[in-house]
Amino acid sequence: MENEEVGLTFGDIFHILWKKIWIVLIVSVAFAIVFFCVVQFWYNENQRKYVSTYSISFPGLNLGLYPDSSVYRIEDTISLEILNQIKEEADGAFDSIDIEKMIQKDGISISEQKVSNSKDTESEVLVTLVMDGVYFESKQQAQDFVREVAQYSIKHVQDIVEGITYDTYLNNYNSGLATSYEQKVNYLIAQQKYLLNFYDVMISSKGAYYTVSIQDENGTSVVQTLDSYRTNCLESFNETVQQAVLEELEVKGYIYDLTAYKQESVYRTEVLQGLVDRLDQEIAQLKVSREEFVEEGNQDLVTMVDNKIMKLTDDKIVCLVEMAQIVSNNKLTEQQNQDKNASFEARLNTCADLLKEQTEILQKVRVQFFEKESYFHMQKNQLEEGGGFSSLLAAFGGFIIGLLGVCIVICIVDYPKYKNQKNEKTLPAGDDSVKD
Image 1 (cartoon, rainbow, N blue to C red):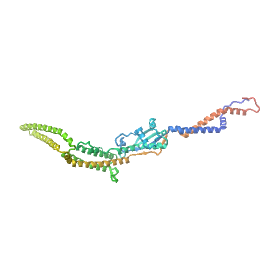
Image 2 (spheres, rainbow, N blue to C red; image 1 turned 90 degrees about the horizontal axis):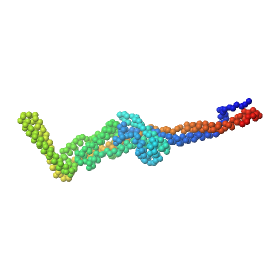
Image 3 (cartoon, rainbow, N blue to C red; image 1 turned 45 degrees about the vertical axis):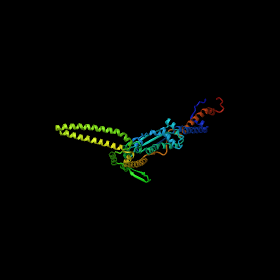
Image 4 (tube, rainbow, N blue to C red; image 1 turned 45 degrees about the horizontal axis):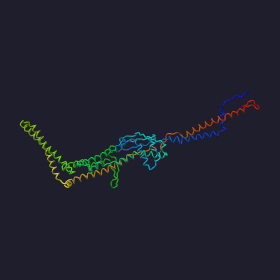
């Protein structure tokens, strides 16, 4: 009876592979290790992303403005200029980070979401920062870098608040910009309005009874409400004092720059004389008209003309008084003018000193206010890792691929030999008819 050819069965495959089970296992494990290492130490290193979420808040954030009224944009936080600044200020901790390449390759991105906006608090935003892990030596370095980026806006706010010039108008008062006492008084008024505006903004944000603690010039802690600070500032140069100063200036006619005054007095005298001449003409014409109205018996028109003549006469007297004052002032020497102005200047300087004190207080209040109300908060202490592929899953895949590959190769190589051995076993004893 002839032998029938039979195909390769699962049993045959098992017997073939079982004889070389150690080769199968070694190759499969080797493939698993290779896949694990490639994914873990190459692919994942190039695909890993670090993700961090944190919240920030500071007064003015709800308006999208920094304290100096410059526009706040979260995208600016990851600009080349700012990231390089963060790198330079880190004392070498971030020297290995290629900032330019990271930005050029879109290796960093940032977004924000507004999470609160109530009457009692400023807005808070939740920021998400994503960075490619390839630019960092370690996860810890990335974590430190994220923290510096997260707190940049808050540091920037404090730098702005501390660096703002709060005494601009006082500086103008003390400089040579002022050309008259009236202008110097206006500088003092402007300085106080400038300070009060800052208090109004803080009060509108947190309320009049929000307390702030500052250190006075003696190092003593002072705690007051925003309303109290504002009231003290207002009283240092209140409307009554302002009005009294302006009235004294008008009545006494103090001259700030005598030389300039004398130069301008020639032109001013000509103007005043022209006004007097015009007023005389108008008065003369009105007197003629008055006589006509008297003859007509129109008493109402007579009364109206009389009132007009009185008004013009008063204006003429004012001009004549000023002209006389100019003549008198032109006779003054510099020393006489300084002596005349001494008490008034002392009064103005006292007001300026009080405003200077209030300016220093405001700066301290505002710095403390922003320090209390500005913060950043990391949602998690550790960065979240994303991107890449599971190393264990890669190892498992490598094991399967290695297993299948080595099994196929062994089967292809060893099957002919196995087949011959199998056929020899199935031949009847002493039968030499079947030959290869």
